[in-house]
Length: 575
Image (cartoon, rainbow, N blue to C red):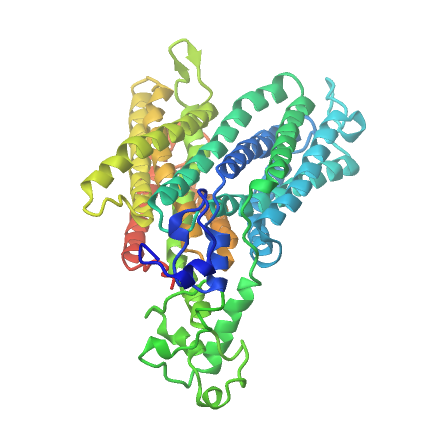
């Protein structure tokens, strides 16, 4: 045949469809390998990613339409105490960021991404309907406060409302763990440059759509809740979730599905057990002597052997007993190179992931100390009064501006300047994000120093001085968070993509906890001996600038640690 092909190769694969990437097919490949390649590479239906982006936008409105104003609802409608309200919101928020791990495990092990999303949306909708009903039906909430007292919600009323909340927490966990990897699965896994650029763009647009949902929920939905009726606001959020679910189901015929391949955690445990059982064995110097199943007929992805963490190679070392009797081993005594390399990938990603926790702790200042800083500044810009919390919406808009700047200006410029034309790698982009966080914290510290000086001079600084730190931290999010999602998806073993994607959300949750721990520690240390401390109730008597400088220093150390491990990171290689 022409073009270097062979008649035998043509018999093994169908004629190329125009929707398939040519890089997804190779001549002279066995049928099993071709079937796997066909399942993972094509076809790419352009409607499927758009449906998933729409789902992300609507789900963002639904979740934040409940979560953003939750503490106000607990106080004004259910008449809860401030301390218990804060604890309830923190517990619910923590659960919402931890449940994606469960969802990712179910998606990778049993259900697959599509079924995980489908089942999770059912829980999600039930939770949204329950919360809306709790706000709409008079018997499910206490009567309004009168002049003399407020009647708190009964145990039954609280039970109904929090049942809905935690159904949302578990439903959102399944959706968040599976939706992004499911969307990325719709694109070709081949080396087609066009397909790769589309996948990178998809990760950016997914993040932008989520941020748009936050923006709509934090402005329109919140205004409706506070000025018209809570039930109407919750009802709009529920309608958005219903539309997202309906659109997702209607798009079912267009999706490309990736089936689960069994428990990835079991495979990891098998490698660890086999390694300890064979501690006495010497690892062969030739990696080709390590155990692997037939790469030509298995139809599964195989990972190339690497020299890192060589002690784990003992799990794939064939003993004399196993050599003399090929059937004398089990998966708990002899593992494949691919199984060993999957564990190595997780170990290599661990320090990268750990530095993202410190990064997230700094990033959470945008929703905490930045707002406190703005609350003691002059909130009028021209004829408008700007609530300090509203600058988070400015941050969302800055994220969209930064995505445009990166995709249209920075990325093309870097590609033209680089010798290979590849542009910045994922690790380099995350490094830029981590370095930019240092600049953001330093900028916030400088603004606070100037603000304290102006207070001594009897003046009040305008809240507009906060805009640069919001703009810089938004750029940092674009470089880091978007790329982090892409990195964990691309580097994760095929059997663990949903779980590894969930790690990005887990780092956000742990970052919030770390931020709370840091503030508590700073308050205890700096407020001793009758001193007001760095972060007192009256910030004009404190030194919030010292706190921001400390965070900048912590981010600088975190950046150095990241660079150390990123320079030594070896990308996943597939045979």
